[in-house]
Length: 325
Image (cartoon, rainbow, N blue to C red):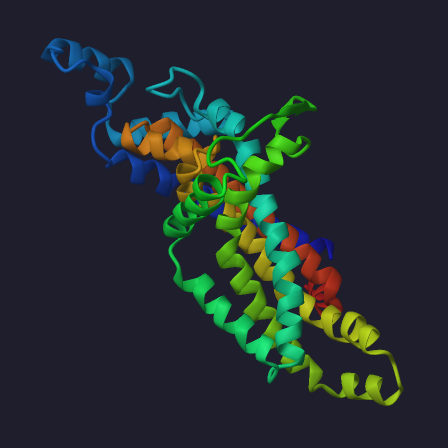
């Protein structure tokens, strides 16, 4: 098990180093941020002064090594627009994005697994066919359109839920969160549903296929022959065995919820990292873009490591392979 974790950590380090190189040179070729930092009537001398001040007049490889030195110290430069540390700005917005992604993931699990089990265990039931048809809609409908329709229905027409913002927040261990206030939950519900829609459909189809396959296995037939209750058969013998692919996919999907929440945060004016990234791209704020991408990369690598460890806990064969390695 220890050898398995060490090997995964080494692979994660290689991924991080590769992404540092790709992120820097990828953002280096995106426009010229100097034009976003000087007034429209700036003289050529003023433009060159700003260029020298931020080191844009240096060759790309010199800028890269300077950037690499900053990264080794946990710093990604100062935002050209905000004038503050880019990583500080990202980390300030990160709790809002994380709570939105976490709420969406919980919705995907709570809704998707029961519906998927029902559809897999009773495939010929009319409700099962309705569930699968609804899951196709979840894959097909664009996120921005669903968000606008949710606002139109629940905020404009019915007036039940607020359309934008994070609502009332409280500070827990120095972090502002809306998870502990009723007003915060009201503001969180619509964006969480919008972000979770695709993942609910994914979990339904994944659980359904796993349940149908597991229900035909010999150990399930033997459990039925022993006279075990249907609830025990489903909860112990079927669900436990299909959790491995579900845990793997959900772990990776949590990272994608964080990384691709830009559309949802923009539609609902949710004060998270995605909304900040969109503003940074519009203004060519390179340090903010780099800091965001690197935070997401670290998040993906960490989630992958946790998923692998959970995978090995659920499947003894993975632990055996790791110990032999």
